[in-house]
Each structure stands twice: as C-alpha cells, then as structure tokens.
Amino acid sequence: MSDQGPEMELVHLLRAVAVELGAHSARFAQRNGMHPTDVRALIALMDAARAGEAMTAGRLGAALGLNSAGTTALVDRLERAGHVRRVRDGRDRRRVTVEVDERAVALGWSHFGPLIGRAVELLRGYDERERAAIRGFLTGVREAAGADGSEPRHNDPR
Amino acid sequence: MSDQGPEMELVHLLRAVAVELGAHSARFAQRNGMHPTDVRALIALMDAARAGEAMTAGRLGAALGLNSAGTTALVDRLERAGHVRRVRDGRDRRRVTVEVDERAVALGWSHFGPLIGRAVELLRGYDERERAAIRGFLTGVREAAGADGSEPRHNDPR
DNA sequence: GACAAGTATCTCGTTCGGCGAGATACTACC
DNA sequence: GGTAGTATCTCGCCGAACGAGATACTTGTC
Image (cartoon, rainbow over all chains, first blue to last red; front, side):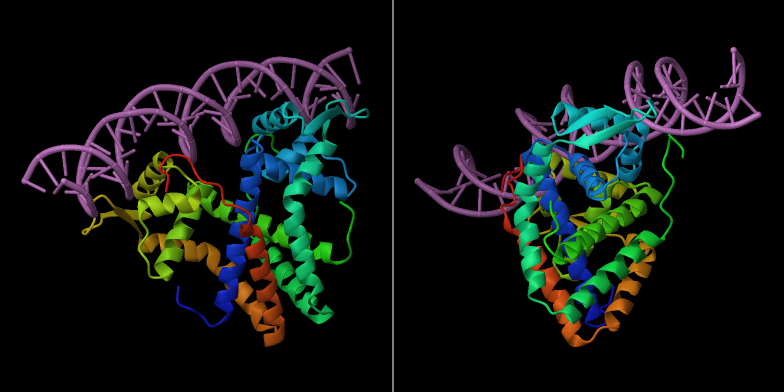
C-alpha cells in the first residue's frame, strides 16, 4: 500500500468519514436501545417516504440485505419500540407497508440535525464550481462502489 | 425534513456514499466468509501498520467498540482464518500485538484496489482548488461526526 | 524481595440478531 | 375452481458480542 501521490490522502479521508458516520449512527442506536440495523431501517424508511413511495416489509428487508425471517423480527422490534407501524395494504392484502412514526423522525432529527446543519453550513462556504467538484467526486465514488455485483440474498428469492 | 436548499442534495449524496461503501465492504466480508467486524478490524490493523505503530489486542477492541471478550473472539476468528498473527510483546509480556498477514493485505487490495484506483482517477481530474474543497468538506464532516462524546465502553475500562 | 494494586488478555455462560426451512395467507393465471 | 406464484410470518438454530470474573504479568511501596 505505497502512497500513490497526494490523491491517496483524500481516499483515506473519505474512508475515515464513512467510518466516522457509521460510528455516529451506532452511537444514536446505542443511546436509544436500538441496533445498527434498526437505524439503517429507519433511514431507508425515511428515504422512501421522502421519495414519496411506500415501503413494504419485503422491500425493506431487501434494501438491508435481510431474509424474510430477519425482516419480520426487525419490524417486530421497531414496532414494539413504537418507531414504526404495520399497515396492511388494501389492494394486495398479502403486503404490509411499514410507516415511520413521527416521534421516531423527531428523535432522529435531534441526533442527526446538528451534523446535517454543520454539513450544510460548510457547503454554503463553497462556490458553485467547488460544490460541483464535491458532487462529482461523491457521485463517481458511489457508482464505483455500487458497481460490482450486489450478491443475491438467501430465502425469499426475487 | 423539508429541503433546505440545494445543499441538502449533497448531504444525502454523502450519506448514500457512506452506505454504499459499507455495502461494498460487507460484500467483501461475505465473499470471504468473514463478518463486517472482521473487515473493520483488518482495516484498523492496516491503518495502524501504515502509521508505523503496533496494534495490541486491547487497542484494537477499543477502536472497534468491542469489550475484551469480544476482542478475544475476534482475534481468534481472524487468526484461525490465517489473516492475522498473535505476537507476545517482549517488553510487557501481558500484551499481545496483532499483525496482519501479507496474504490478507493482498486479498483486501484485490477487492478494494479497483475502487481506490477509480477514486484516485477521479481526483486527478480536479485542480488544486477543487481538491481543496473536497478535502475541506470531508474534514469538516469528519470532525462534526466525531465531535459528540464517544461513549465509554463496557468492561476493560480505560 | 514480598505484597498490594493496576493492567492486558482470556474463559465461561448467556443473550439476541439473523439464518434456513417451511407454514400460512392472499393474488393471479388458465 | 384449482394450481402456481408472491408476501409475510413461525419455528428452531447458530454464532457475534456481552457481563462477570479468572489468569498472568507489571509496577509501585514498604
């Protein structure tokens, strides 16, 4: 792992940021008696809500890489804690859509809000060309990381 | 969670990158019969090696947020798989330093190399001012994420 | 140099998230 | 209306990580 120029410093920095963000949400989990997976689930649910699409139990499990048994246990856990509601779909009554409770959103916001606020503040300090560089780099890395085959999961084969 | 301007798009993008990088290393773990924690451990060990400092079992566990029992189990696992060696410290014979095996480094490089290469390539496409913006943003986010108290861990209190 | 206090790691027994297999409930095709 | 397909749940099990405490070594202090 020899240094291939000054670019490597930035690569390590990005990795460090990813680790630090992971640790930050692990802290949120621990403080609220949750598990990392539960936090990932809430984030996935809120993302779906923001995109205006309903999240079913199955899609949630697939997004997190859980099989159906694990997904049921996850939703049970979140529901028991009051972070989430199960709602039977009216059209297709096999489906269960999972909705985030408002209080869970507020709770998340109280923890992640300051960090998000700081990030926005930082971004305001850059001009459009600089922000475009940040956006371009992150987009490129996301694509490169997502590129290689996302393994099929067990059980519940789609 | 109302959109507070175009900066939010970049914040979500950064989060997406963190998720994608996590998924990428989870894939590496799964393909090699390892657990996410094992990968985190190898990364921590390689970081320490790169910084030229020895990593003891205790420091490794602390870095990963494991207690002593979990740390022992982790090192057992990695040693059994041949990724790591236990070496008794000569000066303080209570200590066990953990060294990464060369083959584990090569294995990691074969999986993360292409992604790292792509990131370096992307970065070469920006001028110094743009790279400074990327560096500044990432550094700021890392500091903000690490800012709030890193909870003390159970057992093995330091 | 022996004794206490401190530190690093390991052992033992337990908890609980996630898995595989398969049951159940509903939909869709013919 | 029966058969195939799909979404979720139940059951039994495995193993990563925990708490408590044992063990081994070091560093004072007298």
